[in-house]
Image (cartoon, rainbow, N blue to C red; front, side, top):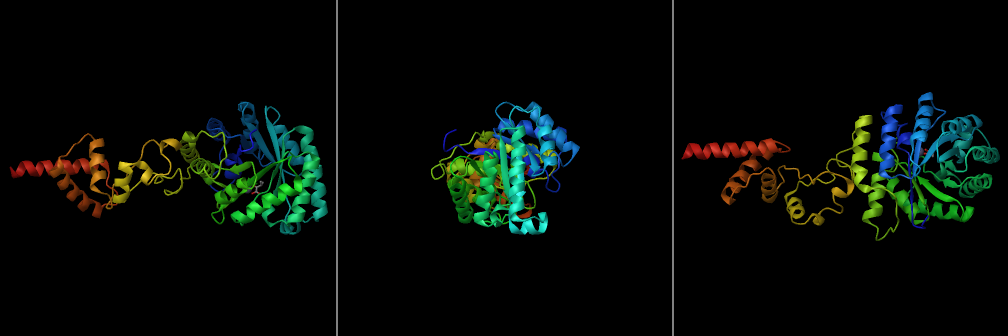
Length: 390
Ligand code: KIV
Ligand code: ZN
């Protein structure tokens, strides 16, 4: 794989699915999995098989149906029962990955797991060796990496590599990190483990920094990014896949990295997920929100109509949004109104346009958004009045 290729690890069906209101049944997961494969993700984390029979079944069926190009991952805590269950779910998968995790921060070791640092190291070694007895592709995640003492984090990751882990993930589980700090962690981890393993990042969005942290980590040497469609995930969510992809594409000049994602399927993938889970994205959400390509201010509309690049850094088509949706409201200008009338097949002359615009502004003062039906009504009213005054 080229040195600048970033592996996209999608966790919509695992971390995303485990967040409130986002659960999916097996047929829904299969539908979403097919879309994610079309989209071009490299690794598809299909679920957490020990969590429920449904999760097990979803992982099994996705593994069975997955194309050769995609790795199907299943999550497991660092215990025999979890790993055996995940391995069983992946049995029919052509490219299986076991994703084993254990927390490494003192706060988790002392208060959640109630084990010493040494006990955790032993558990990591045993768990990864067991996972490797089932599959060649094993990822280890040091949960709560960003709050783990750095020296110890390096030690834990070295134990995982010695036991056979091929990908090392250092999650910002609680979403507390900031970009430069997270990037430094990646550089430190690279020093601690050497060149062999792929370094992965997994960022939560509690401070709204999940995407920024992920990108900083890539610049520092990480080559796998874990993310979800629409940014769904525990609490404030995970890094949004569509934002990472479009940031890498739009700012290729400063982040010269490649992925296998077909960007024109980003919006359809977002829409499909929304229709499955019934959780809509905020209107102003980057890349896939309803307003991401909508322009209301007159000056913006005028600019976009003359040259889209004036206010658009990417085209709606490049992410699969059907058209550039100009929203007509009280800030809209005459040029936008004329364009919308022309789109509706109506070509007012300049006097008519002036009159229509006057009426439009009056209406827009009363109504937040003026829709096509309103515009057609304005034409009718104007025509009726001009007939009655003749
Ligand atoms: O946030 C996290 O630490 C996780 C791990 C299981 C990778 O989701
Ligand atoms: Zn997570």
